[in-house]
Amino acid sequence: MAGLRLGPLLRYADGSCATVWVEASRPCTAEVRCADGARGEARTFQIEGHHYALVPVTGLTPGTTRAYEVFLDGTRVWPLPDSPFPPSVIRTSMEDEAVRVAFGSCRWAAPPAGEKDPFGPDALDTLSARMASNPEGERPDVLLLLGDQVYADETSDRTRRWLAARRDLSDPPGNEVADYEEYTHLYYESWLDPEVRWLLSTVPSCMIFDDHDVIDDWNTSAAWLEDMRATGWWQQRLLSGLMSYWVHQHLGNLSPAELAADPLYAAVRDTPDGTDVLRAFAAEADADAASVRWSYRRDFGRVRLLMVDTRAARVLDEEHRAMLDPREAEWVREQALDAPGSYDHLLVGTSLPWLLPHLVHDAEAWNAALCRGEKGARWARFGEDLRRRADLEHWAAFPESFTALTELLAEAGSGPDAPATILVLSGDVHHAYVAEPHWRAESPDARILQLTCSPVHNSIPLSIRLGFRFGWSALARALGRRFAWHAGTPVPPVSWRKKGGPWFGNQLMTLTLRGRSARLRLEQAREVRGGRPQLATVTESELAR
Image (cartoon, rainbow, N blue to C red; front, side, top):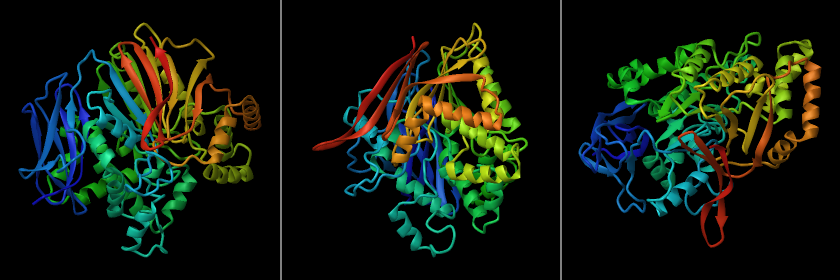
């Protein structure tokens, strides 16, 4: 009999259909049955001996909330027996309803119950517990996970013990993951957490990778990539990372219509074992970044989300360095400008912040100039070493891409059909803040903001707390101008100010978008003496009326 190994995850949901992702223990037919009679089924496909299904659920009624169950070969496997959680539900939207979007990034898996958590309470666990205790209360309509869903290069003690039982950790890559099977262990460790498992079964989710989903500073430079390709373990690590991402995260980002038109998805499902097909795809993606698009668009009524790949789509040649290859950049532009007036809010999900503290921005732009050789070969070598040591690889480290994104946001936010807000949602930097740009030329009509929120569950070293507090200061801004002077970097097309933060903790931001109004709430997971951790509101603000 087939068992449920992982999931279910409710991924896509709109007014009439949804998709539910599962991993089973053997080949089978997965079925989702809703309380109102809506249902769907799909046969599992096989990758590296694992069996997955993405079940399309049709016949849903807009504006309804319906409990669902999961069956494998006719046997009910979800909800789990004696589950302490309320039923998992599929909630379908109405065009004129408010949309609540919760987002964050950087979640290191929580330890098993009873073990001390070195990073403090997990914001996703805490959100799940709050929702479970009040099923009729407020809940996100979608959860955006903006990178570092798993840490392939920073494994837990229990994962290291598991790795040591299957191979010699004295051989590279040591206690980091090496292949597809080891990646699946990371997802089990993270997504079998009972609170997170239930949360992901009942709140639709959108995901995009960042560096730790593969390795720290993934694709930071051409020299970095050359060094990695010279190792004996990198190729298998990268292909396994892309394959596991496609299975566990990317497929669920797509709508049923997009899945039906996806030739790779069809090819994997049409063969008894899709491993070779998927590995060939990953190898092509590695050889030619333009051969695949990990970015995607989702529309929630009059809210448009563009989730942008800022890792695999990079151009790394120093003379043509870009955050997005030309094909990817053009796609983002087309989606942002498509059907002006058809959306009230544009959300741009990019794991790496567009607007950083001024000192960090200027240091990254200065470093990019050094690495291009504008101060000579010795400075270029110094710049490359510094880039890797200090993680200087955000939008500011790709100056032309920074300018192009800035101009695109201004264009999308201008004119009679401009949206009320354009909100750039990011994570990565292990703290939260709000920054607002001001254009040196004519200002756009939309309110444009950088909203950064991380980590969901991870460490926040003292160096980050001190460094980013200082990075926003007037003294740091003056120091940044010295960097810009030394490299001769041009003045950015915008200036910006911090409007809130920096805030440090395990945290989530939630946007409530209704008509042309927008509100922001930041909550942190905090210990409660004698009780379970709770989410505490740190700040609330109105972004647009």
